[in-house]
Length: 329
Image 1 (spheres, rainbow, N blue to C red):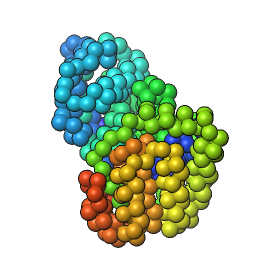
Image 2 (cartoon, rainbow, N blue to C red):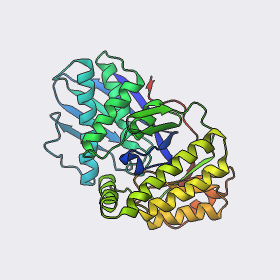
Image 3 (tube, rainbow, N blue to C red):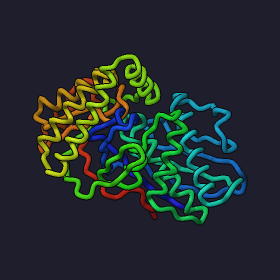
């Protein structure tokens, strides 16, 4: 039996634009998905998922997602979850040079699904790491990140970037632009506050919507490029440890994401509540359509304001997690 965990992430800058070759800067936060993998005597895969903002469920199938199990949770979430676990197991088997092996897989997480915090990336990264170790192989974090990206790319119909999986595998703050992925060596300790509306956006649908806008309108394509410019300015602000400038750029980033149609009323309400409470900046994080916002505030005013904002289910402070995927005992 092997157990691994991997962290969630927030985007400081660059979501959606990173799909089109622009840079993005996500950073890992101290919320984790933990996956335990144990070989079975047969070739089945049994998945038990807990604490994924669902009621918890157990799924048994023959190692492929051709047949959907009859469980009382939202269909897209279950099918996606099965696809991610299936893909992670396939990557682990390939890495270890094995085939025809069954597993019991237990997933526990304090990362809400579909909220823009990289829950799928964390689960896939942790699952690949745990499954390969259960098979007697040991992969470097960079290799785990690459194999996890292949899974997300497949499940998300080719629309995924390397940002989520690389950040989850490596920890800390990272810069991703196309195939170029690197860890930022001196990421500052940012005063991150998260607001969560309890909802989950459809990543594929939101990414497809941005693509359609970009193909139809030249100014939408320019908006995507402008997000890339914000990222490059944000990198300089991070190097200077200039929280106020980072916040201003986050505000710009949110405005452009909203113009691309990926925000939501609850997200906008939380963003404005954070700004009015004195946050240096605030923006949605992830695909959008619902989920989470990230704000910067050293005081407790933003978290308190979010807790009283209609549509905000919970608010919490999130420290930077400098550790990526790790073994658990």
